[in-house]
Image (cartoon, rainbow, N blue to C red; front, side):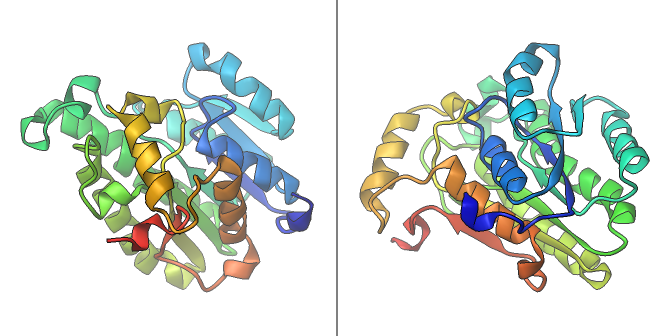
Length: 258
């Protein structure tokens, strides 16, 4: 990644959503670090810590804290530490999604009320809450990034209730971009093609989805977490100062095919 060296020099950023070394958030954290940023990295809980710690160590994270967005006060604690240590935040990456398995694997029409509420809270509303906490730390502007998927726009077999949930997330991106734009805060969503992450393994028939994406994408190949990280780095940099409210596809062109 020598071509992005220095792109984020002097910037500080928060990365939420690293589960292991194959996570989308990991690809982004590595790219941010290679570009010169100083990072805060979070992990879900003690069980997850051992998987995330090597990633945090590799990117020389200055802040390494637990964060469960379903726990009251957890986000405030993380942002409090960022304020105490840095006094500002230049960018953040939200790469968090969850849905109870029984609701994820069923039809949208069969999704339970509680399952839908949890999926929306963790996958979409947590981004809105992060934006609210980041706003006062971005007095000089900044970049808010989240991670979506093409299933927000079109029906993808077996993506089920996460399609409507990600559609809500993308809607939030547009509204947050409009609200925060006057303060110089940009808001964008990354929309990668299918990647073999831990989260993706929860989707039924994921291997067939991978095969279809490879066969139908104009590039005839799958994207990598490094591809996503490179795009995220540009969106976090000053080179994208007038790019906001966008859904940034990183899918080898799959989304243009009928």
